[in-house]
Image (cartoon, rainbow, N blue to C red):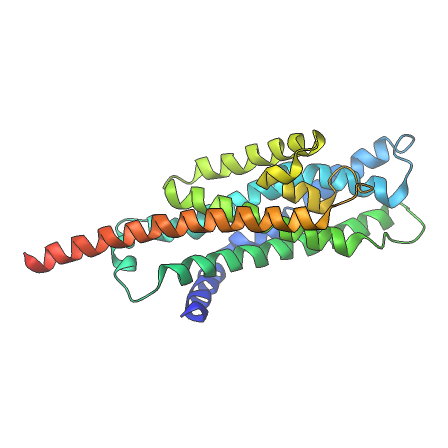
Length: 251
């Protein structure tokens, strides 16, 4: 059943260009970050590492959290439309499989965004005339950034599930990204889900050491907590839909 749910979510993506945002919008933080690097090259004198700090400053704080907010809100849009919840929840589809399909797809799209960020980073470095070897830590930055994004996706999926309006969850994502960088700068990054994206990408500080065990543990805990909250909400919706169906059959 999970595979069928995944296929259904993929079909929704094919019909809508929303996933293209994760491919195209990373261009903007790359342009901003490269421009900031070139404009302050006397101070930012650590070549690739300085460029990465500028790229991730914009992408992890503004663009990625907002993009994840948009995508997760869009994933629940069809269910929130008209009376689709009643027809959907009375169908023979386990709510856990539905949620898992949405979380998996969001995680895949987040990984795709990280790959685009990495490619744009390399292209920007060449355009900026940076010589020297490419940082060997780059794959780790991208993979940890994708892992940190999973907890953000779980949080955003919950908010988008509970709040029917499209805009508020997106605003939460943007605010969470800004707060995430603030928490990270104060050393509280492992305690806030949006900070995990910053920590994983080593946003604005590529020389920062990442404690992998607390990072993975915090990501797992936040993902599990908000997954359980979402499933609890879905099961309540499921019970309500069953009651309404029973009443209609009695009438």
